[in-house]
Image 1 (cartoon, one colour):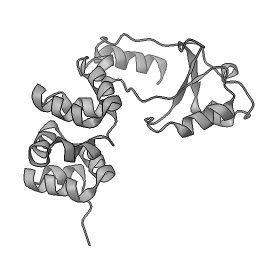
Image 2 (cartoon, rainbow, N blue to C red):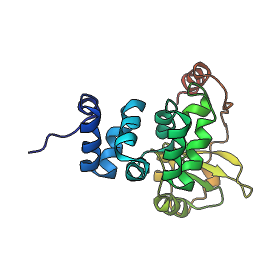
Image 3 (cartoon, one colour):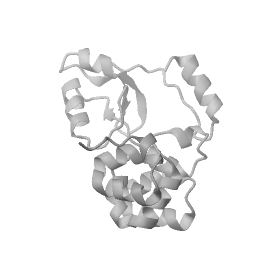
Image 4 (cartoon, rainbow, N blue to C red):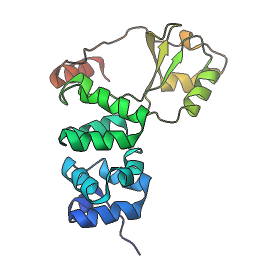
Length: 196
């Protein structure tokens, strides 16, 4: 019987054992372990496996977690990894790397669920199901015809509403905004104040 690999047990391995483990696990399982480790493990894996071989694993990690892993990697190695990711994921990670890790921009995710406010609940649920890459969803962001945020809909409200209800009828219009350069302390204070 093979012992399951946890982030903790992975960190106890040598760099060579980590690389062999990532090859054995496959993309989804490798990503689950690697996203919870550190930049050193990623650097070692890249050195031993190469960016191309590592890219299927990295493609399974959300952009915000990749940015956290990439932030301590030298620019030349980071560029090799970004080039191997594919254009969409690389753009998301580059966007997040523009912000310091301890700011709102550095903590945000580029994977969220948004739908036009004119959608019905049924159409919104269908669109969310079809979206291939969305992080854990607590709120759905409602947008106007120009793609601007008009409010949020808690997932609970979406699930309890009638399928023919319009999103605009469920929207909470009190929008809490933070600047991308706001420090972590400001973000945490806002979350506490607004009970997020």
